[in-house]
Length: 164
Image 1 (cartoon, helix red, strand yellow):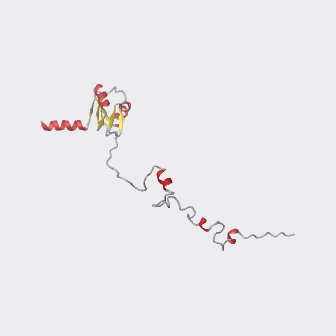
Image 2: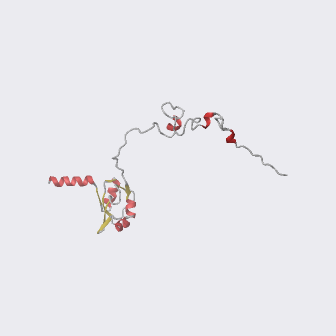
Image 3: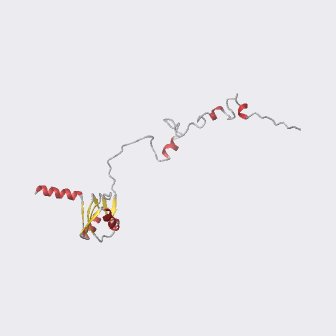
């Protein structure tokens, strides 16, 4: 006995004439129509339903750019006396600092730092050139027998020399 296999038409060929093609309502399979858009679509002037979820919950109060941007703001990079003390040997080896007698001479610009802070003990004598320094760092280095050279001090000494 020979068995015949039933040939079954596929579903999509049977639904060619219908407009929904098995998706229910016609609008449910049309792009992003049923869900109201993709991403931030529909969050315009009158998109009050989407605004709370898109804007205020994430910490933004406005869409787009607001306010001014300052480009000339200087970032103050710091170094503590403790770190300067521990890395002084490597600074001398790399050429960022020089040893003149028992005094270590270093310019903080060479190690990409702007300000020296007073945290840590000072056991060596330093001559540090920095743009800024904390009062505590100045006192500690002075007590150890060194000094900090600041630009404001340099300008004052230049002005005194030109007056004389």
